[in-house]
Amino acid sequence: MAHMPTLRRDRVVSGFIYHDAQTDDARLTLALARTAADLGAAVANWTALVGLEKGPDGAVTGATIQPGRGPDEPDGPPITVRASVVVNAGGVWSDAVAALDLGHDPATIRPAKGIHITVPWDKVRNDIAAVVPVPKDRRSVFVVPQGDRTYIGTTDTDYDGPVDEPTCTAEDVRYLLDAMNASLTEPLSEADVVGTWAGLRPLVSGASTAEKTTKTKDLSRRHKVARSASGVISVTGGKLTTYRKMAADTVDAAVEVLGRGGRSRTRRLRLHGAEGHAELLEAGAAARLGVEADELARLAGRYGGDARAVAAMIAGDPALGMPLVDTLPFTRAEALYAARYEMVGSLDDLLSRRIPARWQARDATADAAEDAAGLVAGDLGWDEARISAEVEALRSSIERERTDAELPRTATTATTGA
Ligand SMILES: Cc1cc2nc3c(=O)[nH]c(=O)nc-3n(C[C@H](O)[C@H](O)[C@H](O)COP(=O)(O)OP(=O)(O)OC[C@H]3O[C@@H](n4cnc5c(N)ncnc54)[C@H](O)[C@@H]3O)c2cc1C
Image (tube, rainbow, N blue to C red; front, side):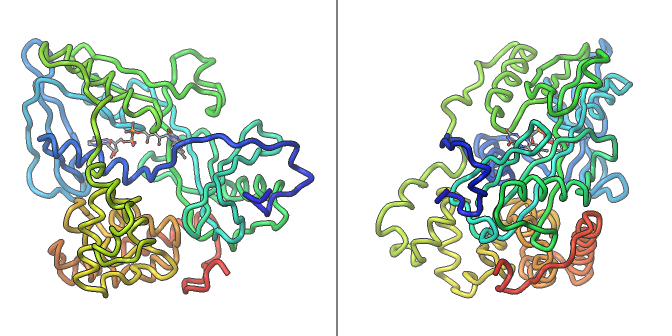
């Protein structure tokens, strides 16, 4: 009970502790992209594959890509890239990519929506991740502490809307709040929800009627690697946890098409950021770098060895150690670091996928949007018009997210969570 004092004693039959891994999925993905770049890959974001090139025998010989923010906002002409192997790792979009190869939608993916909510940590006060059962649904939700926030999720429902923008509804939020409240002494309400996000699991669905109608929560999370008649390799399904196995199987299939190269070396590959990480946790490291020990530990957790670069920015200009968004620990230096080294393409990239401000403090992030855009504008070459457009796009997206879930605005000052 000491690990989660808000648990209802009458609901606890017994307890056990098990160990699992925890990661920030966006930062893990970024570390992977940087690892690939370190090893010589050319990495491009905001660039869509829009066509496949094929030779006279029908074998794939390359791909056409379109830089820009979508079909309506191209950034220059399309580019054709010659390639001996093309891999489709399009997640929930992989059927759309496969359709460019096959000429029809293979309908292999069954998207399953899942949402998370964020509440102030002091509403739950769990010092380890907890698993709470959902009454009458044979499911559990995870309750994961994250600094002075707690993440709660997830749901698992069939989804047939637009895959680009799944939304979190009032019903989704209620499901999680009801699940929590069945086990908590102090009920949570919509007013406590300071952030929400929705995602789609790219589950592999078989062609049989049984597989098409099974509840998504009962569908397998296994991955599948397949090769089409033209030689395009697709990796579908899977989980973040199994990404190295998914990658290894895909690389092995690609090597087979190429007819040269060894097997995947992921087993022994250290990710970008691993180098120099351990030294940052040694006594005296913080004093040497001129930052507080707690702050260096937080930065090392997010950036690995690259935390040195963020710490040096703060040591050089202490104003960069100030919060980027009120109520959250992320510093202004981290925004500049993201703009310089992490391929930020939009303000939402910065405040959602480089720094998880939006997921942890939705309304405070909307309030900080203008200041954050101004801070990174110089590095990203944004003029006044672009700054306004970015701020407007982020604020309206946040407002839509809040109203779709029928949530009230939350306090956006340092008293949030009191
Ligand atoms: C709510 C929720 C909870 C989850 N919880 C867990 C968990 O606890 N543990 C776990 O292991 N897994 C979890 N997962 C699953 C995990 O997040 C997914 O399996 C994983 O993100 C899928 O990775 P992916 O690389 O296959 O696809 P994605 O991450 O979707 O990546 C596909 C990429 O392809 C890009 N793309 C699509 N079309 C094109 C195109 N035409 N041109 C160029 N790029 C394109 C997309 O922009 C995207 O970046 C969860 C998923 C959800 C939704």
